[in-house]
Length: 97
Image (cartoon, rainbow, N blue to C red; front, top):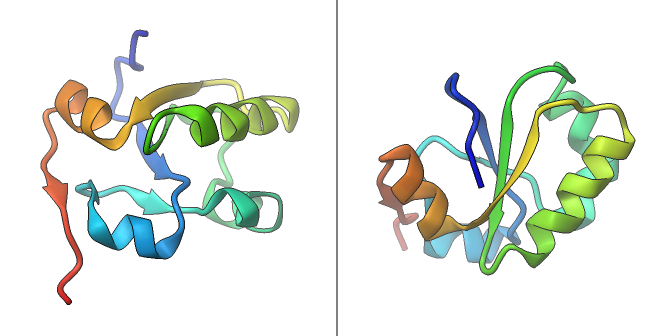
């Protein structure tokens, strides 16, 4: 899987609780169940490079398919949070408890 050459928007489709445990630094949390209601507000540019991630890549693949069906043109399923962090050379952050 090749990531976009320009700096992508990283979208984590995990639940808020899972996101708090660990997410790619600078990523946006948009839980899969909120995607249909919030995508247009959070991701207004349909031609921007977007990389999706979750725990294993399953939810991010569902999100990628949905976004493509809505006309987003540069959507990549990055797989797990760790894989995306590694490929983008970003840290994994945790929310303070």
